[in-house]
Length: 470
Image 1 (cartoon, helix red, strand yellow):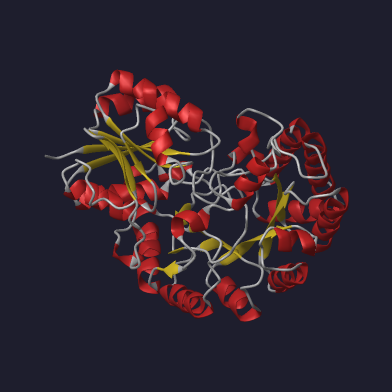
Image 2 (image 1 turned 90 degrees about the vertical axis):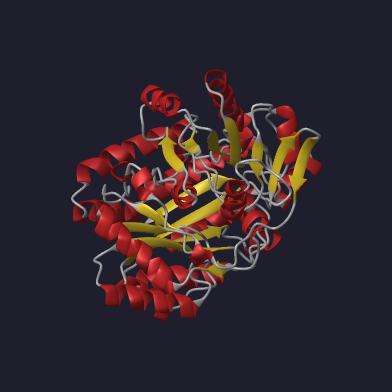
C-alpha cells in the first residue's frame, strides 16, 4: 500500500522545535523562522520508500488555507513536530484534526524522549512517538507497512495488549547515507535571513555534543559522541540548494560545528574550491575555535559565529557544567572580531546559583565583549535535563502555567532571587546593551551596508516593545 504522509508544524506559535532550543521566535534578537529541514529530510526518506509526503508549515502559511490543504490531502499518517512550551496547544490541534480525519498520528520533539508512556496514556489522539532520532525508526516503520512492532528502534506505540516502548538506540553512525532533505516540500522563499532579508536554509552537518551543560537536552537525544557527515555529502547538499533552489544563505545548525578542526578546514577548502558564492553562519563552543579556523571559515563564506557565553561569572559556568571559562569566551570573541567575522552571543540567567553579584558580572562581561548581536534568556527547565530535576527537587517553580517554559517569562526562581527580579534583570541587561552607543553605531553601520536601514529601524522599535513587555 502507498501511504500519504503529512509532515506538520502545527499552528501553535512560531517556536524553535529542535532538541536543544525550544524558544519563541519573537523573544530572540534574531527573529527568524527557520525552515523545518528535519521534516523535509523525513519527506525524502518517505519518497525513497515509495510513499507520498507533503509538508504543512503553519508558521509561514495562512492557518485556514493550510488546514484545508491538510484535510484535502487525506493523509494516512500525520507526523507532528511538537515542543515543550507549546505541547498542550499542539495536542489540541491534533485532537481537532482527528475529529475531521481518520489518520494515524505520530509525534516527535518536546517531551517525546522523556515520558512517552505517560504521553500515550494521557493523549489518546497520539498513536506513536519517536523517542530518539527519527530517520532509522521511520525507515523501519515504513518497512513494516506502517504497523508498529518491536523492530522499530526508539519508538512508543499502542497495540492490542497496551502501550509498548522500544528502547533500542536509533542513532545512525553514517549520517551521509540519508537522502538530502526534500526542499521542494518547503516554501523556501518564506524563510528569510533576518540580517539580509534573503531566503535562507539550514544545513545539519553533524549530531551529538560531548558537553555536560545542565540546561540542554540535546545529548539526551543525539548522544555525546559527535557524528559528522562527510564533507562531500555536505557540499553536495549545498550545491543542490544553490543550483536547484537558488538558495545562497545557510545556517549550520548545532553547537559543535568547530569541534573537529580537520573536518572544518576540509569543509572550508571544499567550499572555496566549489566557488558557490554563498554566505553562512554557524555556532561554536568558545573553547573549540582558533585563528586558522576563523580565517578559513571567512574565506569559505562564514560571516557570523554564535557563541553560548551563558555567564560572565566563572563559578556560574562551572556549576552549569559548561566546562569553559570567561577567558575562553573573551579569546574566541576577539578572534572572530579580529578577522572581521561578526559575533552573536547568548546568555542564560536564573540558574540555581544566580545572585545579584553574578548578574552584575554577566552584564559587565557582555559590555566588554561588544557583540554584534546578543540574546539574554531566562533559564528554562526543559524536561529530561539535570536542571529540570534540580528545579523539581528544590521546588523552584513560581508559576503553574506554560510560561515556565518561555525563554523570556520562565516561571522559576534561583536560590537567591525571585522570578520578578530575574525578569527585571533580563529587561535591564537587554536595554543597557541595546542602547549602548557602541552597539547602536555597529548596528547602524551594518544596516547601512545591507541597505536595510528602514527595516532595522522598524525592527529596533519592535524589539524595544518586546523588551518592555517582557
